Amino acid sequence: MASIVGKFVRELGQQLAARSVTIELTAGATEYLAKKGYDPDNGARPLARVIQEELKAPLGEELLFGALEDGGHVVVDARDGALRFDFQPQRSIETSALN
Image 1 (cartoon, rainbow, N blue to C red):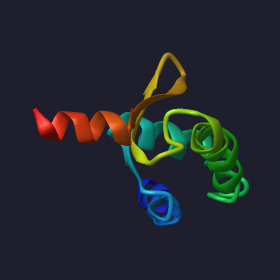
Image 2 (cartoon, one colour):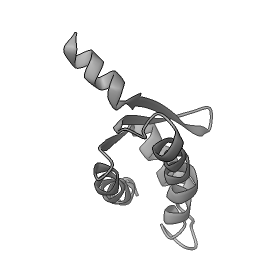
Image 3 (tube, helix red, strand yellow):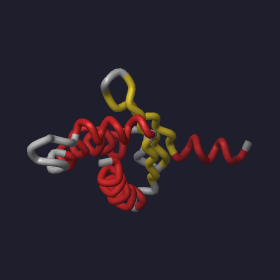
Image 4 (cartoon, rainbow, N blue to C red):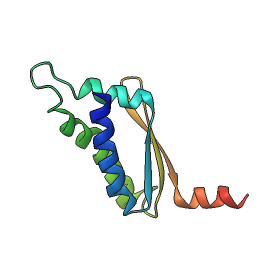
């Protein structure tokens, strides 16, 4: 299942690259998505919906109106039964490189 999650995230990463955004999932986030996106009767079929609702939708908000509208990097982790996002806007990344 983790390899299927990786495939979806690589595809998402390619889409985000067009907006100058990179994404990184921790092992915990990968495991969370793999467990939540697996159904004994349907296999990995629910995974696309889980990724849309829990990963792409929150990223979309940040891409349009938030920390990632000018590009940047996002680290996704899982804590307390939910995905958590650490947004590093492009401005912050550029400032760190100068110091």
